Image (tube, rainbow, N blue to C red; front, side, top):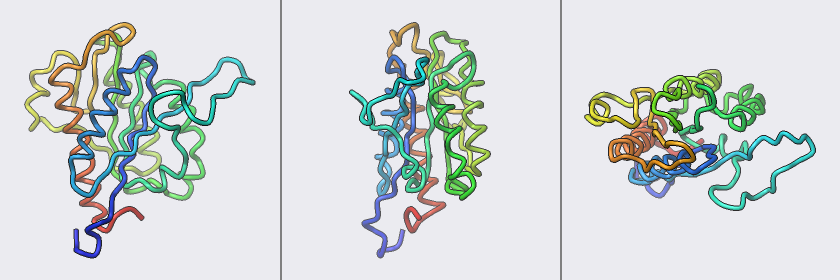
Length: 209
């Protein structure tokens, strides 16, 4: 990074949906990894739940956790980490609903060329972690993003028994999020955030456009 841009802070969007808190905890760890890279800052955002009652609406500001995402967050970010719990091997409806409303950004190429990664949590160990991760990659590929995984240079990928894959960070949360995040899953999540931020800086050393 040249001296004229030394004070530029590069925002990396960490966008997640969490029901029982497990995916949120992973998002915070990924954010920790992002913040460890000088010049980068994690911007945590979430999406409102989808209501089965058509006239119901969520408040503008959630009662707790990260603010709701806005399309401006997509425009301003230099990279994206996307997370959702598993819903029958797929991303949650709330997250899918958000991406279904991003056609304006798709047409404008807002996210094209920016790096992205994905993460998830599941109630059961074999509850569809990898298929959920791959389902989240699909809209990002349509937006022209550069998908990043986790390399096997991270030894935790060979020793984990609770989550983490070459497709992205993951966590076996148990029913209602009762399992704590394991040491391996924690390390992999932080490493994923750090890798995303470092790549964003390499692709865009002048800061966000």
